[in-house]
Image (cartoon, rainbow, N blue to C red; front, side, top):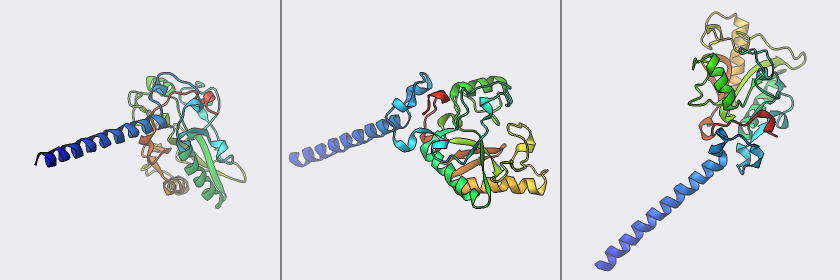
Length: 235
């Protein structure tokens, strides 16, 4: 009887050890996807050992046909201040590949994507919050945003031949109810354009934000950590 009890004891101990090892590996994998010290000490993200699919990449390296209009690299934004050192759309590679699929689908009907913003450093979100502390439009930096994780995009549609943007409910960064997805005062063609953008993005794993027709979050955004790496440090 003593031998049987001792054997049960060993089995329980072995099970606990295996469980602890599993938890340790999960933590190691989480740290590999996005090291936690990036939010407090920005460094070149290329130096970190992260899975290929989780790296921040320039969208042009995935699909150069996507049009860039990075507003925060100019003064043409609601802060009227240049916030980015370079006009770059950086995203987690997995997210960038999804966006490329949207572009390819749109090209089949003569359209394409125009990108206003992608990854956004946390320090930039803090500046925005100081000016517009409204969580309907700017994420509270205490919690961070999908943009800070490299898992959100602000986009519109363009005609591939002319490069002209299709008419949308409002201009980018219009913080009125006219920009809301359920606003019912838009012209039929404007609604059609906005709905087409949303349906194409949803098809490839992006979820729309109700208060901004241009904003989409990649499904699975929560697996990526918040970053504060400058755009000019991303290869």
